[in-house]
Amino acid sequence: MNIVCFEIEDWESDTLRPLCRNLDITMTSDNLDQDNADKYADTRIISCFIYSNLRQPVLEKFKNLKLIATRSTGTDHIDLDYCRQRGIAVCNVPAYGEHTVAEHVFALLLALSRHIPQAAQRTREGDFSFKGLCGFDLYGKIMGIIGTGTIGLHAARIAKGFGMNVLGYDTQPHQNADLTYVTFEQLLSQSDIISLHVPGTPKTRHMLSEKEFSIMKDGVIIINTARGPVIDVRALLRALQSGKVRAAGLDVLPEEPAIREEAELLRESFSQKHDLETLLADYALLHNKNVIVTPHSAFYTKEALDKILHTTSENIMAFLRGAPQNIVG
Ligand code: NAI
Image (cartoon, rainbow, N blue to C red; front, side):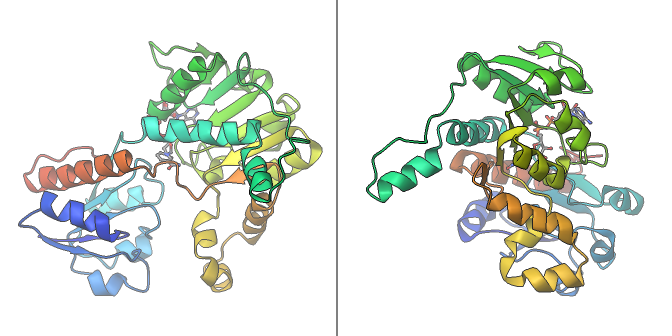
């Protein structure tokens, strides 16, 4: 059965190949997209990360496709409805990054609370004054976790370690979570820091928008390592301008794939009808002094990548044995 792994770096290929020994497997650093889909149209198993195009117009070209093994937890980049109709199985890596992503939440939060990027830039320039760098303690603050799944619960544990009080909101609360569950509105109005950990779905799109920002505390901090569209970035920009939101740490942006392809930005924008207003809001956020943006790198540690590659190879092997695992939707 032929397998194509897209978005693979050389070292990942070196790790994955021995794990999938004896399989007919092609590795490429390319994303799967409209332009190269025909070249791989015979493929039976696709493995990808989140920047490949796995929407119906591309998937239609793959007449023999049996499995998509995404090397991510989130599956919002895949047209799951179409896969269901076509009987294409989709499996993911359900847990690899709970520590990894939760640690990144605090990397962003501490960078904001202690002005780390500005402080480091200042000393690099030979300036050792701390004027204007006054930060704030995390100790004693209220952290609101939206989505108390694997990552959210780990972020809550870390927050407790800092001596924070932790509130949680989830449509399916956890039995033994070490936090206080409240309503969505209570979380928004009581938290000093709000961190998002829900999946990217139509229901979570713009979960934080104008109305939600309006009921938050003045000077709230927003951290998003979940998915870009969960926040209405135009509303976030306005909340930053008014001071309602003091600062934001964002590992994800709504028009992230287009931003990543900066060299192709204009072509992409016009040919694929990206939401230009949202794209501009993304750019405005990138240049806002109270915002730190990381390039969707919250998952990107050695330990997490090893786990991703091992689980992906197990997912493919299990599917080939007729005992699929980590099937989504
Ligand atoms: P999970 O599935 O364990 O937890 C998600 C939680 O959100 C669940 O408890 C679920 O009940 C809750 N939820 C779903 N819809 C909701 C809604 N409308 N309102 C309130 N709660 C809702 O997922 P996990 O592993 O904690 O990951 C969370 C998200 O983090 C992923 O879906 C992915 O989008 C993102 N992620 C980001 C990474 C990065 O590098 N930035 C890496 C890995 C995941």
